[in-house]
Amino acid sequence: MKNMFIIGGSSGIGKALTNQLASTEKVFSTFFKNAPSSSHENIRFQQLNVLEESNDYSFLPETLHGLVYCPGAINLKPFLRTKPQDFIEDYKLQVIGAVNCIQACLPNLKKSENASIVLFSTVAVQMGFNFHSIVSASKGAIEGLTKALAAELAPNIRVNCIAPSITLTPLAANLLNSPEKIEANAQRHPLKKIGTAEDIAQMAAFLLSEESKWMTGQILHLDGGMSSIKM
Image (cartoon, rainbow, N blue to C red; front, side):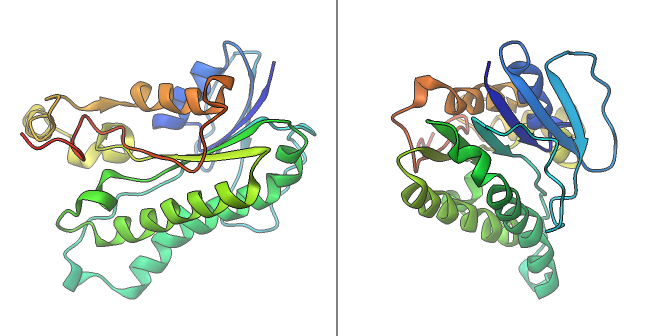
C-alpha cells in the first residue's frame, strides 16, 4: 500500500481522487476551511493553508509515493477591469501554494524509488479564451513549472500536469448553474458533454500509478477534444 498526499482533497477533483485512491492506497488529504467527514480507514484529513510557509507536515509518513496539488480558482474578468493584485493573489494560490507543498514534501518523495507529482492547468492556456487572462497566466506558469521540475527531479520523481476543460465541480458552479449553461458548454466540446470530477481523478490516479512509470514532463489535455479538434 502506497502513501498518497492530496492537497485540497475535500471538494471537486481532489475529493473524487481521495475517494478513488482509498480503496487501494493510504491517502493523506487536506482541507482549508470545511472539515470533511470520512469513515474510510485509509483516509486521513488534515487542515492546511497552502500559503503558509511554516506549515507542519509532521502528519505525513516518512515516505510519500505521490503528491497531487488540487487547489485552484477560476477568476474571469475583462482584462481592462483586472488589477495587478488580482494576478498576484491568483498566482499565490495556483503556483506559490504548489511550490510550498512540493518543497516541503521533497524529502518524503525522494525516499520513494518512483514517486509522482501531479499538477493541474487548464485548456485555456493552449486555446486562449476571453476573460481568462488571470487563470491562464497562473496555469501557464504551472505548465512551465511542470516541465522544469520533471527535468530537475528525474529519474526518481516524475512530474506531470493535467489540463482539463470546464468540469462539473464546485469550482465551476457559477459557470454551470443551470441546465442551459451546462448544455451550452457541452456543445463547445467535440464530445458534446462536460467532464466530471471522476473523469479527471481517473487520469490523476493513472499518473500516480506504476502504469505511467515512463511518463514525465507531460501536459495532458483531458478536455473533451476541445484543444485538438475543430468541429
